[in-house]
Image (cartoon, rainbow, N blue to C red; front, side):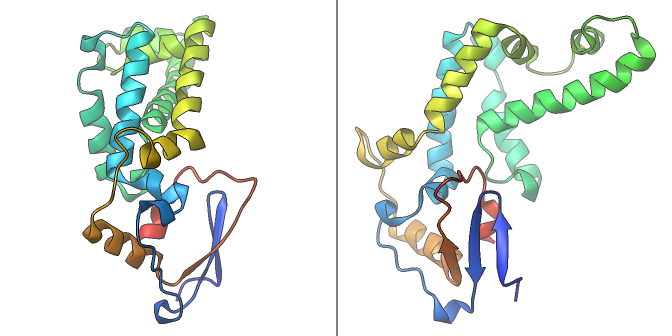
Length: 202
């Protein structure tokens, strides 16, 4: 049995024998928001909104080509990536490149005023160079923040559940998700927002 109390990002749960605590949720409305956010169909809709938002920020089809496929492959490549949405994929991409650029520039471009741009210029194969421009341009960065605020909002989850074109979950999916929650007694965190709780589904 796992530890008596586990911390998963901003949420907590007690783990007890599954037979003592069965999840019997009947439909999508009964599942917690964080679990809806982990659902592949929800994340696909979220990705649609993010990609449309990026187009509105001026990113063309060529720049966006392969983005969704790369994100999905990244999710599947490692357990630690499972359940992370498209915006988190892009943010992690930036963080890794910036860290590499710092090390690279110390040796190869010590006088560069912008180490990241110097690194990108020397490595044209790095994907999504447009995202670095978004992150450094104040107006574009503000637009990116608005996109993230939208898809991370409770209203976005509610729209998925209840709005126009609202989704229902199949009995098979509901059964699978109930089984994932069996034995897990959730402790509400009123001031926390669970960004990724894929470990709960193991």
